[in-house]
Length: 115
Length: 114
Figure 1: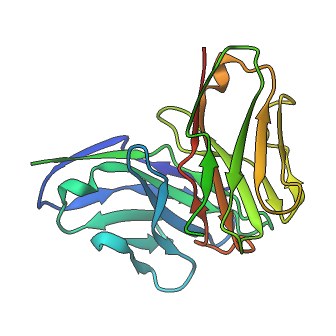
Figure 2 (figure 1 turned 90 degrees about the vertical axis):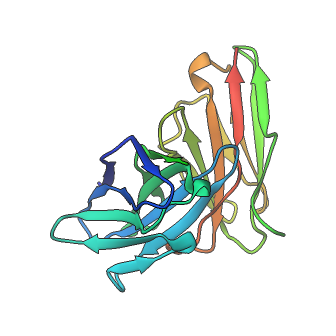
Figure 3 (figure 1 turned 120 degrees about the horizontal axis):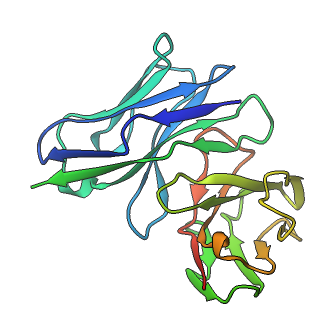
């Protein structure tokens, strides 16, 4: 079985400072990993994905994540937070070893950005 | 076709009533997934279809939950004899052959059982 653990339920940063959202995964296979963002009253939006190509993955809106197999981590970073980044972020693993390709979500990290 | 549509956006129902939600996926996507998201949690997988075939339903929360995709296009999720614990956001997503990162989620149906 595959799972992800988001290490912080809430993160608060000041606008213009770096963002770090932490995620550890557990998988018996080489995983596919994703970060999704959910703004209030809006659908889940894919930020970036790792599918066994480059370990440093660049996504939308300046976000990036690094896959570290030795640490079983897939942390999300952004050099400079913007007010519009305030949202709920989910680290996600796909069970690509089965045919269904269902997604397993972490419990989420709420990012607050202070002016 | 610009995305995955879900209807209604909000549903308030009395305990014991039946409710049905609809999902219209992206037209060329052959896979359709249902997820449930409770407050403060990430979405959890319920069931999925490839075309009209429901390939897994073991994760449906009880036998009160059922889903259909009769013509391989839109899908419905029905909850019979609703309970307060069914209050949640129900999300639909579609993809082409389950390709990694190829999911598109709808905005969800928020169910409140009173």
